[in-house]
Structure formats: structure tokens, C-alpha cells
Length: 376
Image (cartoon, rainbow, N blue to C red; front, side, top):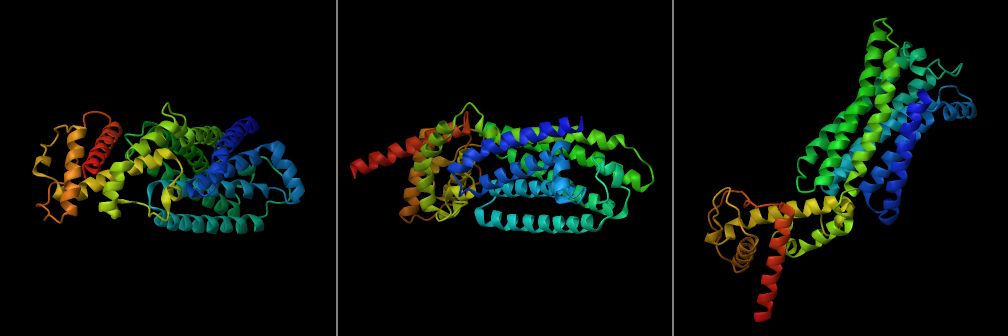
């Protein structure tokens, strides 16, 4: 049963790895996509090494029984590091995401180094055992080793769950990205069930109480959690709205976004030199960022909007009217008009889907600008 459970987890990991590796071949410079592929790879290798038919020959080849466990646990710690790095590139501008990624990797590598030192000197290499936790968890050095592993993995999984769920709340107009992030959070919590069971086992064993079923109960949490996790991170590409449709929407917002960006360059979360690909290659993300930047530009433009922009809170605003007001506000700013007193920082209400409304505003805005050029 042990090999079957972990074998299913390994198979799911390799499927996810190959699926995203194909995307990475098309966009190798994308650091977020590289982090995702690395995370899938670390997890797939870790689960594969856990299967007895793979574990035993590698231990025999190394000539050091049970050393393969270090690889398994280290790869799971690095898996958490890679997913945290991925979420950083999804959520923050590239420079800040890179800084966070360096911190994650530094902490992860220190933990792996400490685990390596403990397991190398621990007296556990005289004979091979597949019941690693039940056999060695009560030994002092291995207790510290396993505690360090579980704390590192638990911290990573809980951080992933929190950040995925929080980020999902900001993507209401991109339903498949939102669903994927929430499923990712669920997968992280299910995987945490593994840490909870094994952690409880260590706490009890330190009190000279052995509840060995806790070790076995943890196994399904590990595999099921990873399967849900993989499904969540790959879900944005499953939706009925194809990549071509998303890219079309992204481009449709270009006229409005460009005009606001020219007036207020600070709304861009990534510099022109960095480009979108530095943030994340997933068009879901780029579309979401463009929508956020348009709203930021609108808020910056509010002091220059005409008096007719004073819409009562909650009152829907037609896309043509919004485009006209934005166009007039940009002209007022360009012509040096004194800004009006600061207006409440509240975007206008939209009638239906926010993305469709913004696309309609952008197209109406583009038509207005084209007519003005024709009459110039």
C-alpha cells in the first residue's frame, strides 16, 4: 500500500512536470514558470524515491543505507521554496519578487544543510529499513532531523495556503485563475495533514508513547494533497476561455492602458525593461495586472476629470461615458488645467462583468482618439 500511495503521487507529479515543461520550452526566460516546473520536478522526484522499488537500488548504489531519505526530505523542502518563489512572482513586481526568492532559497538551503549534517552523523546507516520513521524517530539526532524537516515543510505549506487564498481574492474577474489558486490553497492544507500526523507522532514518541498508525495515516494526505496542488497550479490553462481569447482581451485593453500609462508611468508594476515576461508568462496574470493598472490610472486621473464625472456611489456608468470622461481628463491634464479638489478614491460601478466593461471602455476610448486624429 505504501508504494501504491506514493506511486500515484509520483505519477501525478511527472504528468504535471511534463505538462508545464512544454510551456517552459516556449518561454524559457519566464522565472515564475521556471519556478513552477522546478517545484513539480522536486515533488515528482521525491515521491518517486519514496517507492521501495526505486529507494532500495539507490541506497544500494550509494552504499549508505537510508541516505536516500535525505534526498526525499530535501526535495520536499525545496519544493516549498519553489512554490513560494512562484507566488512571489505572481504577486509582486519583479525586483521585489527576486529579493523574496533569494531569501526563500537562502533559508531553504540552510535547512537542507542542517538536515544533511544531522542525518550523516546519525547512527542509522547500519541497515536498510523501509519503516524509517517507526525505526529511527526515537533517536535523538533523527528526532531533531525530522522535527526540522516537518517545521520547514509545514511553514512552507501554510504560507502557500495563505498566500494562494489571499491572492485568489484579488482575481475575481479571472475565474479560472481564482479557482486554481483556491485549489492550490486546498492542496497545501491537505498536504499539511501529512505534517500534522507525523508531527503528532514525534510529539507522542518524545513522551514515550508510540502511536504508529499516525505514520501510516499521513501517507494518503501527502499524495492526495500533491494531486490537488498540481491541479490547482495548472488549472488556469483549463478554462473555457482559451489563451487566444485571453490574449485578445489583454490586447483590447492596450489603448486605454497605454494612454493612462503615458500620463502616469508609476501605475506600471513592471518597468518597460523588465516587460511582462519577467513577472509571469501566464496571460491570466498579465490580464489581471493590466486591469489593476487601469484602475490605478483612473484613480490618479480623477482630479482632472470633468464635473460630469461625479457619479453617485453605486450608480452604474456606461462604458461610452467613462471613455469620454477619461479622454477629457487626459486632455485637461495635458493642457495644464489646475486639478480639482481631490475626489473620493472610488472607481465607478460597473453593470456586469468588469473585464467586459473595461474592454468596452477601451474600445470606445480608441474610437474617440481615432476620430480626433481624423479631424485634426
